[in-house]
Amino acid sequence: MARKKLIAGNWKMNGLLADGVELAKGVAAEVKAMGKPECEFLVCPPFTLLTSVKKALRGAKVALGAQDAHFNTKGAHTGDISPEMLKDVGCQYVILGHSERRADHGESNELINKKAVAAHQAGLKTVICIGETLEERDSGKTIDVCSKQIMGSVPDDSTAADTVIAYEPVWAIGTGKTPTANDVEEVHAAVRKVLAKKLGKGNANKMRILYGGSVKPGNAKEFLSLPDVDGALIGGASLKVADFMAIAKNSGC
Ligand code: PGA
Image (cartoon, rainbow, N blue to C red; front, side, top):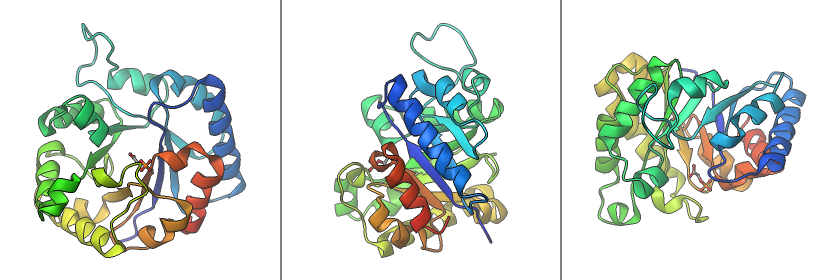
């Protein structure tokens, strides 16, 4: 089953207007220069940059995504942004349930599920993040934790067309540490099995499962050539055009 790889940049809380536009323009120019890349590209800037980045990406095959959304369409939710608002400014994707949101904002599987339902209803594709902490890994609970996160945070009617999973071991994010390729493949294969149980084999076989956590130009090939790894969610290295594009190129895009 051929799944088109997704190379996704999670800019997190980085970038003032000028930096964000420059970064987006740089990515756009490189992707255009690739002609017909084998991969899909996605950048997820902070909310404040969405409109400007959308403009900067004009004409390039790079999708725009946000890093979170509320589960309501509008109303009295100070500081929140709805999926409709994201769609309105040109987003096609939204990242949900990143471990930083699970940790910093106490987001539960149940809440992430509600957000994903709302995002799908608004016509957004979701990148739903899962991953174990170091403590959970050390006690042999990785697959159990990831399975529970999938079962709880992925809506029952999700399809391969509207949902991407990102496996990001919490201890590998921003640390320069990574699991071995064998460990990554083991988790991805297990995640695909859980997806098959939840969403049916057809969806599970077509659904993209990204790896995230200290992906760099130097390790991209090792991870992205694994049979069940369908792309990368890239934090730190997505803030430099050269690194982001090197990851894509080293992954065969
Ligand atoms: P990192 O972040 O690439 O900086 O480790 C990945 C992520 O959190 O999405």
